Length: 567
Image (cartoon, rainbow, N blue to C red; front, side):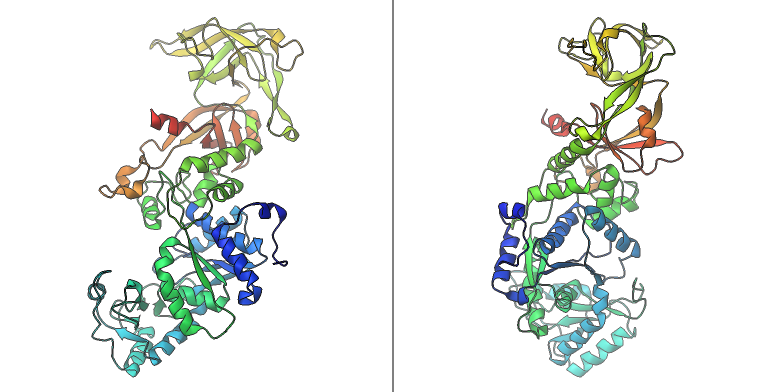
């Protein structure tokens, strides 16, 4: 165990069950003491938060134990795959903070997989079947009823070899023939009932091999063998693959030639979040039907969506570290993910002033035309972050809901006759309002106390309310997008009686176009993070161009959703 590279901090933490297995294998000298993992996405969609859990495990195990982790695209179905997905997957992994040792593809092994299939046919362990998918499904039986054999199960080896070769030459239409493993049609494990190994695909060129191949391996046939060809020692999968493991081991038994090497499949619980769906099919439907604005819509659980919304890689890794890895499926409250984001941004995000629903505040006794630069602390959690200046003038904007004309006793914001502090500036007292014909407040009037400037030695008078503000003249217009849960029910996957589209939250996006932000934000670059004081955490959206500022709310300052839900 002395050669295991584990730092002191990691040693202090209890091992998860996968780390326990890995350390035991190392202690026993399995696979010559090597550790090799792989992250094997199918390039048929964008990565989501569930994939992030697998990424952290696959790459994390390799890092912790001095091994290697390869990125392997399981590109065995050209019907659904695209280079766009390959590129996005690479970008997301690197954004999370990981780097692969090598990029490989299941298609790298197409010839080896094909040759192995031919060997199995020659050994009488595979055959070509010409039945329809519907008939084959019926013949498989049920978990409590045995399957029935295909009439093609015992066709001569030479005939299956000839047909399989001609299948790959494109002589037969899609769906007319398949290659099946010949195992056990009465096995209690449904996956052993002569599973499909190859199918014909001729209408869709492969993104790497073009039209070279006309037959493509099924995932269950390609997955384990690709692990073996690569030298993977620990093949980490989610729990739904547990029932597939005996088939994984069966094919490895037929393929194995090296006595001291064998990949081992280990399953862990997948990540399920409240108010979220993880199905690639459903996420793709949301995109194609325009229910969201693309894969990177900030309401999507995709990594690119979270990135656009302002989630940080560190926050996601911290969240995954908190929830851990077990052998039991469950559902995690999305509020825990949002808490991890809030916790990370609280320590790193600069504080700035922004007013998202502005109403004008006029300080009537402040000199007209005067501009006073106030010092605003960038981050009270990080003294090294320093400060910046914000302009204070006679006319300001404050939040409309920070004023109430007839306020209850415990309303500690602005109301006539009561004092509040304008953050980083002065104490002011409301003296009146101006309303339009409809009775709506257009302007609020107040007077300031010049002896209460923040930071002055004699500014020790305390008031209960502190409001944020921006100068009318020295602020910038901005659009603010407020995001909420994409679904209105806690577990949309369990609502079997309804189409999941009926469960969408109609208030998942609110766009505010009349916002004002301090001039400091003119320096912001896309994806920069900020705390809008008293409102929440935001980042600059990449749609911001030509001086137009667009901000996405990442998370509120507090978990307001659960408070509303509980009422």
